[in-house]
Length: 423
Image (cartoon, rainbow, N blue to C red):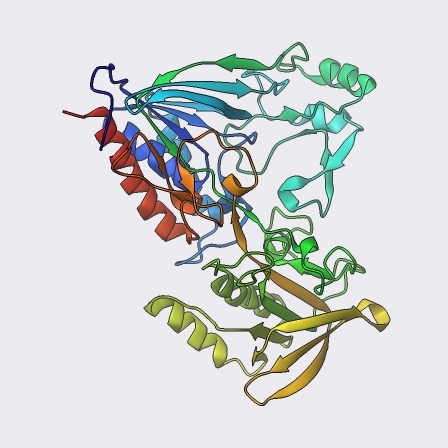
């Protein structure tokens, strides 16, 4: 590792991103005594994991992993959490960075008790991005049922009349519409980028019909439909008419392993669809489930067993072939066409609902991340351990599941600490 040995070393670490990788990095560093600035652009920590119904390997709900981490953060004075915040610039070198951080106004202060009176009187509604815009929420809202910090946030699009109603309704003087954007410039010795991933944009896939046909959704949208805090209270129903599911198809590699979109395998998509098949089976014991795939990738013994159990379900059909075309037919059903490569025949199938297994795109490929880390052609950050100072953790570095992301984040916490302890 190379550093400027003439410069003083800061004893602090900055972690960009408050998802599962960022939480792990921050906690591992703070619990051995280092000050950590945890920066999250959303109004709550938790990242993608907070949007899941269950996650592997134990099929735990998000509360299983997040609640204990939130408790550890609350109990550790070494961690300073800044939500609704982003890094605007980084100056300096390993051991001695000055970082400019911008924080947007929340319009709700620490007096908030989460009573919900502000939402009760608010009439303005906005698209609910937590549910991938499948429903709306009040412009005064709790980011999720397990948000951290547990505090409401008010969208700046709120009407003047709503401002007055909310200010009057709040009994705890927690609403402050005079809040303004702020910046601060902490000095840190190392930075870990845990900026995570976004689902690839399915509207860019011309032959899959997303955005044109209401009964074609993405894998993360299905995850929200299955979640008890989702738009349907956990009931998986068809978006167009709330019909219960009798037939459903999953189209794997929807944009992944495709030179026109994401040329790489996103690692998690096959197992996510297998998991989603179990969601369907729980709610609809007789539903027919079709999974169209190029190759099914189930890395590890536990995942192979999971796949084996599903193959024994007589109403789960695995079709080796990529979905090539889709069309909406009578009743809002979706007809899809593919070539079954095992039998060498073109087939058509009509289903109630089609789920696109969209890939994992690193946020760094979409957003302007202020880092001197290089990225590969796919937008994942490349760790330069010889140079040191700044590191990428979890899905900022490569496609990964939760377990792999946590393992990687622990390693990056150690690398960040090593920067501070140069000889």
